[in-house]
Length: 183
Image (cartoon, rainbow, N blue to C red; front, side, top):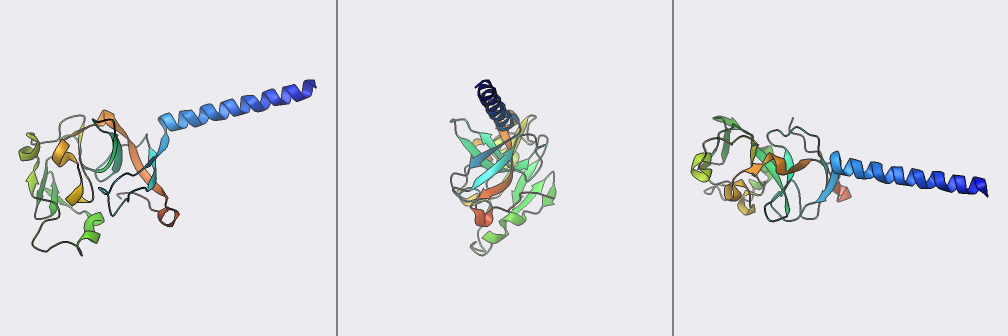
């Protein structure tokens, strides 16, 4: 009977340690999220499930999850980092006066009216009152520019509100191999 109690205690300890490890990993290293809404289409769709890493160094074009002001979390693409000057002209993105390609938007070209811009023309200063992205802030846009509530509306995102970078979609399985690298 003594051996049975000892083995049960060992199993209980292993279970507790396993739960603590999982909690630590989810709190500090990686977690999962479900996408809600259409703002990141065609890259991400409503109800997609994604893996988010909390240790990434955020760079241009990364897809991030962040806490919004209303207690909701949002998924958007990082366009501007602290110190960047951002503008859009004739559906072309300029970061620090250099044209930047956005290949993830190409699938919308078939649906776009040639006389209309998918992303309206703007300069950061006229939209936010600042000519550059302030320190500890990010400028983010949804890939579905026509129907995305993003930095064009709520301005900058505090870097402290960033949960992490979307690394991969794991559901639906048919699209689960999609990686979100910007290299």
